[in-house]
Amino acid sequence: MMSWTKRQFVEAAFEEIGLAAYVYDLQPEQMNSALRRLDTMLATWNTKGIRLGYPLPSTPGSSDLDDDSNVPDAANQAIILNLAIQLAPGFGKSVSPDTKRNAKDAYLGLLNISTKPNEMQFPGTLPKGAGNKPWQSYGDPFIEEPADPLLAGDDGPIELS
Image (cartoon, rainbow, N blue to C red):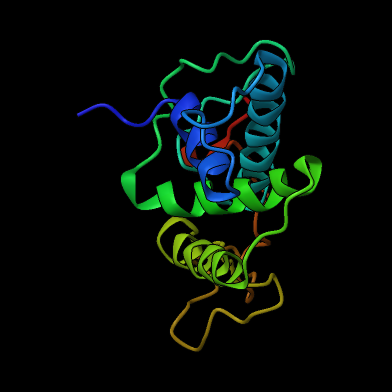
C-alpha cells in the first residue's frame, strides 16, 4: 500500500482551515509555499527525533507535490492538523480550538510511537565491583570511559577507523 503524497497532505491541511481545493482555486504558488512549510515542519520534527521516513529535500525548491511521503498512516492526522495550524495565519484564517487540541493530541501520540530514548552509558568513575580481579582488567578498578559516538539517525553511530 502506498503512503500519502505530499499534495494530499497539503490539500487536507487547506481543507482543515476552510480552503478546500474543490471550492477555492489555490494557485500553484500557494501550493508550493504550503509544500515548503510541510518540508520545514517535518525537518524540524526530524531534528527532534521524530523520524517518519519523510523524504526531506536537499534545497527548498527541489521538493515535488506528487512525491510519495513514505510516512506511516499513524502520522497522517498529526501532519495534517499541525500543517493547517502553520498555514492558517498566512491565509487570514483562524484555527478552531478543536483543531488545536486535536493537533496537539496527535503530535503527542506521534511522539509516543516514534521517539526512542537515548542510550546511556555508565560513567568512567563507576567501580567494576568486588568480583573483578585486577589481573583480568590490568589493575583498573573502574569501568572504562564511555565512547561518545557520532550518531547517524536511527541507523546508529558512525564508526571512524
